[in-house]
Length: 240
Image (tube, rainbow, N blue to C red; front, side):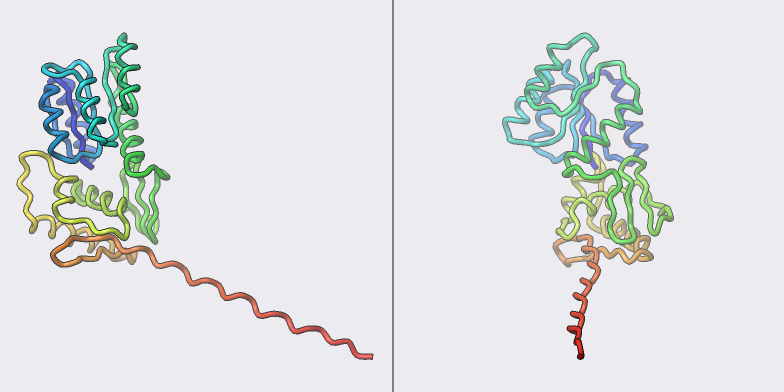
């Protein structure tokens, strides 16, 4: 999952970036509204954390332009504790949630998890796929209730594939969702991540299918065969 943080307070931004990266998110950071608007126009993200008091272009204007492009990207706005009017304007413009500064990092991470789930279509906090379960809150994958040791990149890859079960995901889409600015990630590297994840999921019968030249998809879990209808009971006979 890839997050864009638009925040001009460098100390706060550094803390947010470090905290979210430790939770296996790919995180990019911009310091003003013009950079935020340009990034949102050119690249795909799974969540925007938006400070309303940005230089060069206000957060409200960034949000207005984002929604004018018909983007449904989840947006968490950050505001000063006393800026009720700005919070109301932000929500009216299409923000999904807000937090007043100062705030606790663990609460922000909980809101991030809720918004990214909502952006992926909502659903339960634990996603199940055959013998595999993925706890979106604890960000832990299990096979037959046994935790699977995944790197941050493998975890992000699994999350993307689980959101698109049965649908093809190209290597370019994986790079967009998993990699931050400045990271040089080749198609060969993506193949390595997929290979490692595939090996770790094999024990649970979970298959990542490669469509050569196009991408990957998580194979749909086989459905249990339907139970055949019970044979009708023979009609009873009465003898005199």
